Every structure is written in structure tokens, then in C-alpha cells.
Length: 131
Image 1 (cartoon, rainbow, N blue to C red):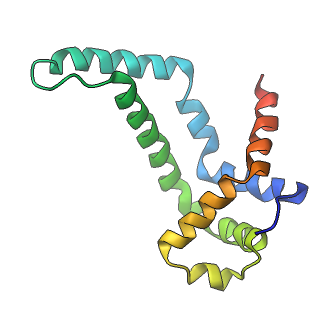
Image 2 (cartoon, rainbow, N blue to C red; image 1 turned 90 degrees about the vertical axis):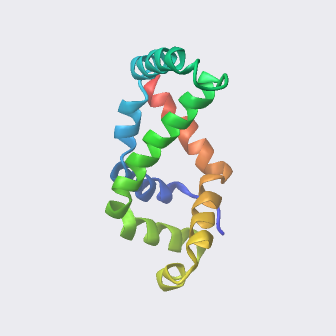
């Protein structure tokens, strides 16, 4: 797999836009997270009699992951072609080769791209726009 380069910014932004990145950002506001924590604490108090002690932060984490995953899966089909094109370019495999991959291998390829140092650097720089 090749290193990411500046021309990769454009398809990455397009994919993030189609996948619902702005919806995820809107969902993860501090106010919404606090509201969710408050609701979970209230529910936890009600459930104390019936269950063992469960860590609120663990439940909050799972709820947030579920919310993010719901947004991504709802929008994934919108970026299918863009995703295949981008991954084909980065992985130096044809779109047909990618389409023929077993699902687990395809998801591993996506994870490999997400774990590239250049991808992390991209998000660090982009986050400066929001400070």
C-alpha cells in the first residue's frame, strides 16, 4: 500500500462527507454527551436493584459507538463508488480485485488505511480548523 499524498485529501473529504461526518460531529456535541450521561445515570439508578454494578462510562462508550456506527452504516452506500475508487488507488489494486475480496479482508483494508500515520496526521491538521 502506498503512502497517502496531498491528492488523497479530496476523495477522503468526499467520502467523509457522504458517510455523514457532519452528522457525527453534530451528534458528539458536549451538550448531547452530557445529556446522554445524565439519562444513563438516571436509568442506572433505576436498574441498580435488578443488575450488578455496571460502569457508566463503559455504557456511554458503547452508546456513542452505536450512534456513530448507525450514521456510518446508514450512509455507507452513498460513498460506495468513491470508497472503491479511493481504495483502489491507495492499495494499487483494481476495483474488480477489491470487489472480489472477502468482506473481512475488505474491512481490514479500510482499517489499514485508517491506521496509516498520514491519515492520523490529516485529522490532526483538520481539527485545527475547528479550534
